[in-house]
Length: 274
Image 1 (cartoon, helix red, strand yellow):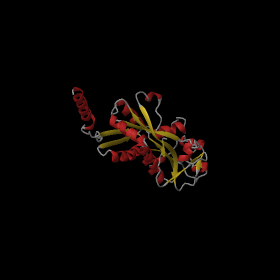
Image 2 (cartoon, one colour; image 1 turned 45 degrees about the vertical axis):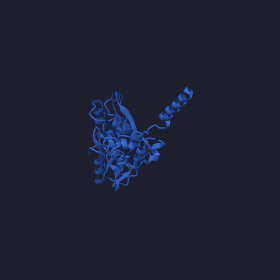
Image 3 (cartoon, helix red, strand yellow; image 1 turned 90 degrees about the horizontal axis):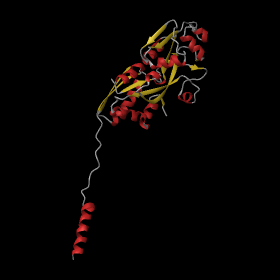
């Protein structure tokens, strides 16, 4: 009899532990909320904004404050801890790298642009260098009309300027006559579109109406020529994080590198980092 009672009690305990347990609901994911701050490259800024629009569709509780200022500003802001994410449109110099993690979200093709009315279709890299160093000052010297060349550059904090000076000018200062300085990529596009004799450079994602792309050494700028290495005026587009970057901002970086984020990169006219 005692043995039977023990068996029944054990059976009841098992039923209480397994069969009669109160079902539990899966944990509810807490919606993301907060503010992410950015500063840096004016080239990366519109791309970050496009990626941000897609990010906010998934996380409407997150606000994004995407300022610009140039790559140098973004790098310094991460060192100072004054923003969550810096933006740079060039590789960091060794003295800038300490404490910064670089996340490449796109490949930028630096397009050399002239006014649509300019008959010049292409330049050699040496000719381009000569124009910006003041050695070639008239379009007739490179097969164009007998007009002085109006040279447009970016300001010194620009990552596009830094990349162009390094790739094309071997880090020399442009000293062409009739030199005009533009603050943003949009300003470069506007100046060249308005001036028939102007030449400038913009990131591939900043091409606008009124501009004509110039082939370099016979190779036009495109996603294909950038990937196969035949077009050499290319640079990385980076998001930068540091020790003081909040976890919410890391979520944004992860999204930018995801399939969805990289599709935004391609749809926006840039070359995927993959």
